[in-house]
Length: 336
Ligand SMILES: Cc1ncc(COP(=O)(O)O)c(C=O)c1O
Image 1 (cartoon, rainbow, N blue to C red):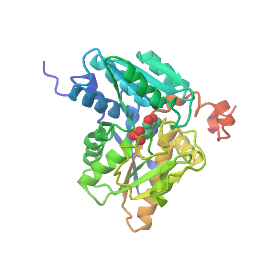
Image 2 (cartoon, rainbow, N blue to C red):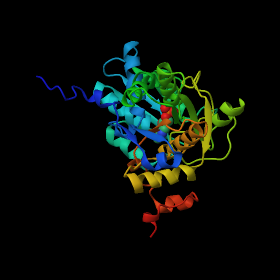
Image 3 (cartoon, rainbow, N blue to C red):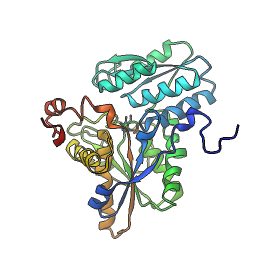
């Protein structure tokens, strides 16, 4: 069978996402701001890449055998990626998640066939934290592997080997800056390392939400969190194995309000329906673009990650009652 323009396996639908020029952010920055459309992955988020690389790595090490189980603790998107990849490769998936994440993510995981284990949100030091619970479950389950997305560097390898070369190729080898937020840190560290391997002059910036400790770490060497954020999937309090050696040149901190304003504008003006981590990333990309322009790089090109679809947050970011309880602005078209 010859099918030169078709995809031979569903697994191959992960990655090779489009890169789009963002008009409003480019105008605000005074230079080109590009968004990598990770919501176009089969699981509708950037985490499909980590899920695929983690599963392939466990297979290659002989840890994951036919009929085995992949177990993970996740804010949701990694679980969705793992559930899809596990189905495609003939494995079961068990996902442990804090019970304060969006209902859409929980319903999606159940719909995909994952076994969902909900635990109360708690500090990382607490043995009942979702990450530790998932590790224990994996130890107790025969034929199971623990995906361990935070400290398994197969996660960042996904971005070294796929996200970075895709961006480099899509922009014809001319990029000046890259920025995004960190959850596990796989995306910022892996894409940063991968891009710098092409051109060490590319400026890599961390865009941190409030409530995370990394902004202070990269600014003053101290892991210290301030404030809080409702953004899901981002906000880290420690240097994970994926973050070790991340080539961070500079850092920004963005509020939920700044991120939401870009979520609103990208939907209203450019027809892109995104989650809050994408809005925070775009706010950071605008700040990085403005910095590069101020330093004399008038034709700067900055890339960021559009991490997941807004359809995953209809009950939160796109729900006036929820926004009001959080004291956050409601999109004008939702005001009744
Ligand atoms: C919506 C969303 N944005 C961003 C991230 C952060 O990606 P990373 O874990 O690679 O730092 C995640 C991770 O779960 C996520 O779910």
